[in-house]
Image (cartoon, rainbow, N blue to C red; front, side, top):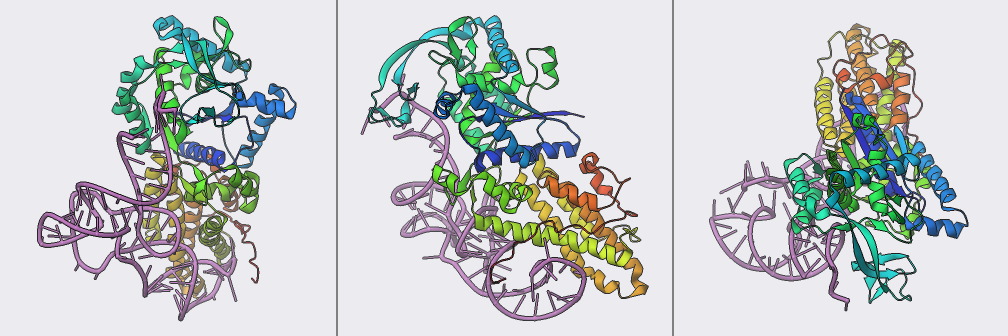
Length: 511
RNA sequence: GGCGGCGUAGCUCAGCUGGUUAGAGCAGCGGAAUCAUAAUCCGCGGGUCGUCGGUUCGAGUCCGACCGCCGCUACCA
């Protein structure tokens, strides 16, 4: 059973989570659940990034201590992820002692093995007293910080600890080119490769005047720069530096947003190489949720809160919509209209209705007992199912969750067509055709069972509900069913129940 | 400024190395059926393939220019 260690980006503790956060967590959860389905030994990590400067400001505004603030934020985020059905195995916060210990250990390990890679130097830049941080590039407009245009930027120099990032350009580039470190989708890999080809500068990895952080080893005046600190969470959660960390490390997949590829595909691998630790095997950089074609802004955030989107059609439906419509590769749009359209057409009318009509017919014509198939499953539906299963697996293996969702619906659609072609409701009126009816009902039951399993990564609650209606114990627990079991799944003899309406449709006005 | 991507039916998108009347899903319209959440199934209409020019017997598909979106990156005021 191969281990599969995957992570999401840890979130800044500076505000409520929104749909963009949700897409990343749900997408990673979908991948995690799929790998469990494959039989992998999955370890799924999520968490919080709690050392940013904005935390101090947010805490001050609320009149609480930074620790109280991050505790509150962590509870808020975790509650949302629970509602969305996230199945993470661990939850790390960068204010935890296990993390500070790991950060210290990593820095000391670099200092021990590659002493030349850590050095002190003057950092010189424009400092904004409003933000309490250095400003560069696009953050400066007309000589002022964009956040505080009325304040003067102060030329400041400060002595910092630096990491010799430039020394790792070739090594990182080679790993990405050879595929030892897979950066996906391809467009992100190309961006990172071009960035590396352009060359790297050494980076400052400590800060003065930042009390809310991890003390820099051997220097009581400075704390570890928040990004350097944050990246290490993936390693802290493995138990590093305890030897047991090697059970999980290296990470098999870091799921991140497309905006932070530089940190994960360049700086992070370089840090690990400096410590003589293996870099992660893969990074997946997803796109962003847009609101009617525009970036998620505060306005949009106000227009659609995460809680509202969950309440609208339920957590499963929101997961499905994000993964199916928005996707995990390109940017995608969230609108209520599109949400309604997917929900009605695919979840209620195609998937929900198929389950409903199939189980109702088994209940009405065979007393709820799934018949054995006298034709041994040689049907058009069976052929369609083989194709869908294969396409589902190859899509999901490549993290193309949109493809997985599409195949789920495609299989349900094929089953609906099968019902029309075979017309079991007509066969039921002809006692001499009982064997044909048995075959049709067995095929439908098998399809519903397969759909429940394939739906798990997308619709975990619904999948369980459907599985439960397919018969009481001694049926197999859903969590123990593997993808390969689906080829031969046979539900003959099960006593099924009529399911509740899986995806109720709100009555339209003038209904 | 540098690098890159995109622009195809009302909407979301497929269209690999150029070749018969440009495709899918959704929405819309018509029909069939009645097991089912008035759900399902079948059929239909609809596109100057961003614009202009070029290469070619022939271009959505190659080349150039332009227009419009977007991404990454840059110690540019």
